[in-house]
Structures are given as structure tokens and as C-alpha cells.
Length: 220
Image (tube, rainbow, N blue to C red; front, side):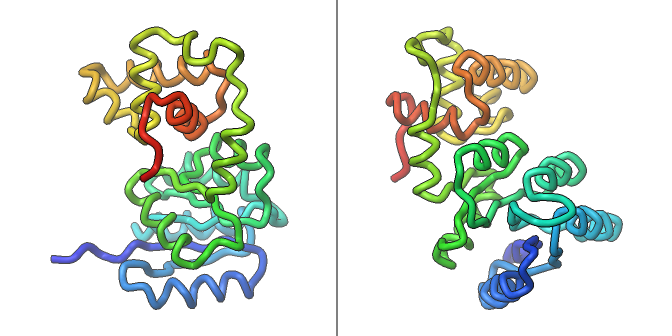
């Protein structure tokens, strides 16, 4: 028995972009477009309608600069109201501040609109698996902009260094709890402590730092 196709919802204020994405995704067997919206406000409203019919998408492809409700605000609302939906940003804007804001609000991926079509599909599949997928240029910018202070990971306790290493492997709070044989709540507390001590705004930044410091293997 094969898995059902991954449902994708497209949010972009340009109709030609939505049409192009929908046409591409339509020819991929394991992906299917279940809806679209022209801005964040419309997206939240239409997702609520889909939720009422138990038809929420697996992944929302989200532009950032749109009228009525921008993508950054829409990500936060979607993640809070529809936690089963993963959000992947697809935008023309790659400033570190926007990237950090999107990841902080819960985005599971960040791509620029010059990405190859295959990379968009890869980011969607990664999001479904609970993995963060970043455009290589975005990942480079985030790494360059890490601000951890002179001591960096030396500020962490041994347990927190273990947590940082597991973040570098892309582990969720539940997975960290299982590996360390602690409660999920304790794992969440450790993650918050790591982010706070290192002055990081997202798990993705922590993962990049762990890889840079040799605490976790980099992408193969």
C-alpha cells in the first residue's frame, strides 16, 4: 500500500507564480496541490475551511511579501492554529533578518525563487519528515551571522552540549528526550537554555553552530 500524496497549499500574491508552481507540482506523483491563496489573511481563512473538512495540507508554500497579512505573520498563525501543517518559505527575499523571523515563527524551510524545481520538491518532502531545508546561500548567510559571544559552546553544560549536538542532527524535542532518556518537557527546557545561552533565535541556527563546531556531521 503506497502512501497518499503530500498535500501542498500555495500562498503567493502573484497569480502566475501560483499557476507555475501548481503546474509543476501536478506532474509529481507523490505531491498534490490542495489549494492556494493570494495573501496570508486569505491563506489562514482557507486553511480554516479545509480544517473544518479534515482536509488540511501537509505543507504550505509561503511567500513573504504580500498585502493584507505578510508571510512572516501568516507563518506564526498557521503554525499555532494548524500545527499539522509544515510551512516552507519560497520568496525573493533572503535577508538574514527575514530568514530568522520566518524560522523563529516556525518555518521548516526557506528557499529563494531562483531555486530549481527539484529543490522545491525536496524541501516539501523534508518538511513532511520534520527536517529543515535551507537554500545553500541562506545557510551560508546564517552561519556567517551567528553571534555566540567569545565563549560559544563553552558556556554550555555537558548535557546542553549533548542537546546542541542532537540539534545539529536535526532531532526533534521528542527524539532528544528519547536519546537522552529524559522527559520531552525537560528536553524542551534544555533546548531553550541552549538557544538563550548562545543568543540564537532558532533551532536551525543551533544546528548550523553544532556542525561548525564539529559537534554534529554536516550535510552529506
